[in-house]
Amino acid sequence: MIFKSVELRKEELEVIAAIAKMHKSLKYSLSTPSRWEGVLRRNAFARAIRGSNSIEGYLVTAEDAIAAAEGDEPLEAGEETWHAVTGYRNAMTYVLQLSKDSSFAFNDGFLRSLHFMMLSYDLTKHPGNWRPGPIYVRDESKGENVYEGPPADIVAKLVAELVEYLNGPRDSEHTLVKAAMAHLNLTMIHPFSDGNGRMARCLQTLVLAIKGIVDPTFCSIEEYLGKNTQDYYDILAEVGRGKWNPQRDTRPWIRFNLTAHYRQAGTVLRRSVIIKKLWDELEREVARKNLPDRVIGAVADAAMGFRVRSATYRHFAEVSKVVASRDLRAAVESGLLVPTGERRGRIYRASEEIRAIAVKIHGSEPKGIPDPFQKGVTLIS
Image (cartoon, rainbow, N blue to C red; front, side, top):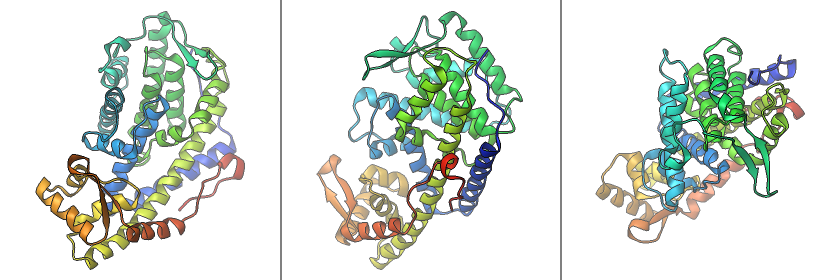
């Protein structure tokens, strides 16, 4: 027996409907091809990578997360952290590709392969294999174990039940719920020696992406979980009660996930509005300075608070090192960017003029998205 969902109440159905409307609005806003859409998608992918790994203690800067998303080298991340981050990037990229395969079916071999992809850099963690013995989740701040996984000798059986659920009809009418239950069960089974949380979050994203509820890059709640890690731990502790308890009420977990989707969808919608306004303003600035249109990619990144590297700009603009160097130098001379550092370590930040534009646009948008189960549903647009 694995954890099962509950019969949804009116409030939960209302939140699901509100999330669906926001996803529809996002699809509409992305339906017209634009250059800023690629930046929004790249940033969403980078935030998911960064959020999921931060939960496990692998912390990277926003710029290094973008470097991971684009296949570049990091500015600051250490070797082990970078292995973890790029392993997760590879797994997520694979998941997003799989979501396009209409014939895909879950099986335990897939789960083990995905795990190997994530953790192949450390063979002591048995990548691709079920854990050989007992496993505990430890709260280092308290100096105690807070969860004990089910016995290792029933892991394969429990995973088989999970796979049957994933391929079966139960909860298929509510993809958000099915994905949440996939996440919960893999987390609680804890089938691997390490990487169970990352695997569970990646699995949740795949279930969502397969159903095509929104562009796969934007369906993840990993950024939200990374920013609300203690709440995430607390709800898992509430549902699990310290050990394998599949008979426990899963409504709190389902509501937590619906809240995460509601807030994440609203956040992405607002970002799409902000980046469109920002892009329009920056296009005018770049044209006024008589710079090539492609320079807007670097200026927009800087305006959003990122430290721009030549490699990042080259990736966006699809230009050579020589052209990138010339473009960035022109942007500096025109007062749009400010350089720091030398040679390989040189980065570019937004000038005061560009920062002022970004601050004004951000200030015009609403702040905060309430808990829909506490404050009621309000559609974000």
